[in-house]
Image (cartoon, rainbow, N blue to C red; front, side, top):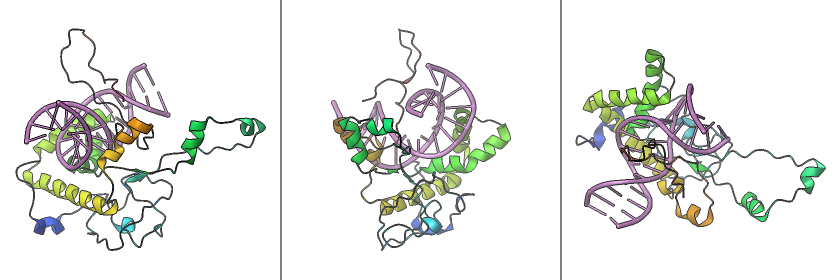
Length: 220
DNA sequence: GACCCTTTGAAGCCA
DNA sequence: TGGCTTCAAAGGGTC
């Protein structure tokens, strides 16, 4: 966190959402799951991803049927056991148990300030540099982020703060731990519901083995 | 098809 | 409490 942050709450309302936020969902829209929202929830309409049709109404499915952008329902392939061979196929017990478990949606983390900045500026960098590789683009964006003035960065920090606040209101019981592949439930039950995630690569140390510093295989 | 790469920041975890 | 790890986005590349 930079030392110049946080901003005074009074300045919040003047922040203009980054371009494109109002009209397009940030997260992939998936089949209609909604979590019940607190009916008393008040939402600052200057918020982007959670605003407009995303603004929670009464508890229950939203009238639009459009889920919250942070929710990603795990894709489940449609199975059509119409053939005899399908019907004769007896699934192992653990698979049957899997299918019986309610499909918990994957609620994503709210975006931090830099992520919000990336979403806004990525298209510009792509257009300017005609790059497509995200790794290269993100390097540029990282440098640009550091080149931003404090005021400009503060705008994104404030947006991110509001994103977190709204996320907390929308999903009171949610924790970032829920998305950890190394969560307790996964360790014990192996029932991780979230997105599979890569391991963090090893620290760039010159090892005597000469092996390339690739990702560790430290999946739990 | 899963994961890597690359960035920053938030948050969880562990000693 | 501090340091480490994971995950958010993105899409081409790799295996």
